[in-house]
Every structure is written in structure tokens, then in C-alpha cells.
Length: 251
Image 1 (cartoon, rainbow, N blue to C red):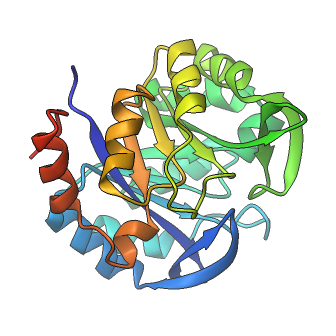
Image 2: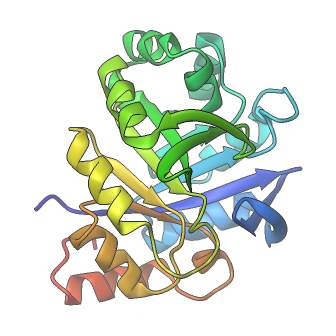
Image 3: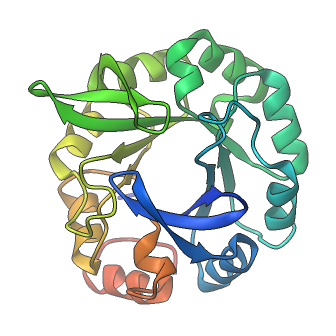
């Protein structure tokens, strides 16, 4: 079994790290630069920076903050929010991003996935999918989870892979912030439908939730935010637990 990755997410709004429930009621979680330094030092495998209001506010990701964070960490760094052109990605890579996460813009213009993969390589392109169970199926939402697309999650994941996405960041809006566990069945279905790594996101609240998403959900990586930001669990604690349960992670 390939080693599983622990990914920490910084949701950014107005220059601060925030965390909500079901994408709403955001609560301040601290300074993003200091948190990024902490998680890198603790042994997080990757860091994801999502400028969560960029698309809604029709602006680009805050480059200065990306530069500050990238200067302080030595782990893979994914940046998302407001990305819609090749030049946006060039700017972010120059600022220190290793990968970019695209969501709304990819749904609105699927050829963007192919364009980015051709220009920067598939390994640079993370297709973020915000999923919500509605009308009897898991469906894709955009615009920070406010706009229904009608697309089903599995079909869109498969199409994203076909177009050139090198990774899927799958977030269950229904589980987000609840600390009741990841969307295991959905993650397992998506993981089984694509051949690229799937990062599970939304719902982490305890150590065993990570074990569940790796063993039952077949996720390649698990992303969490609030459980780390508010001190419920540390990255070293989690990795020790997973190693003790024979789940391979980087120590």
C-alpha cells in the first residue's frame, strides 16, 4: 500500500484562516503564516491554501500571502481560489505554489483543465469538487457551495481525469465542519471510478475517522482543518495513531 498523506487546509478570508460548518458561519482560526509554519514543522505532508471568497468577490487569489507562506514551508503547497487563466497559475507558481486547485472555473470551462495540464503538467492540476447530496444523488456545487450545477460527482470526477486533472480534492459539504467523519461511501465510489489520487475532505473529528477514510474509503490522502487549528488533534499524534493501526504514513 502506498503511504497515505495527511493534508492540512488553510481556508483564507480577509487574510485570516477561518473555519465553518457546511461552508457557513466562519470562525477565525488564526494567522495563516504562523499556522503554515507550525504544520510544516509538525510533519504535515502537504498544505492547501484556499482563498474561499476570491471567486465570490470576482478577484484573484491574494498573491502576497501565498508568497509569505511559501517562504516559510518546505512541503508541497497547493493554492486555490479565483483561478481562471494560465497566467493566474504562472503567477501562483512564481509566488511559490507547487499545485493549483480549480473548482468553479473548471465546471464553467472544462477546457481549462486540459490547458493547465498541457502547460504545467497533470501533477500541477488539482480538480476540487464540492459535493452535496441532493435530489437522490451526490451533485457538484460551485461558487463556494452556493450554486448547484446538476453534475453528478462521479461523472464529473471521471471527466476531470479524462481532461487532465492529476488529483481530485473531494469535499463533502454535508460533512464539512461536523467532526462526525468523512463521506466514506462517496469517497470509495469516486476512488474506484478514477485512476488519480483522491484527497478526502470534510468531517474529520477524530483519529479513527482518518483510518476509516483510508481503509474503507480508499482515499490516497485526507485533508482536515478545524481539528488541527483548534487543538483537537496534532499531526504527530495522528501519524502515530495511524502507524500503530498499520496504516502507512510518512513519519
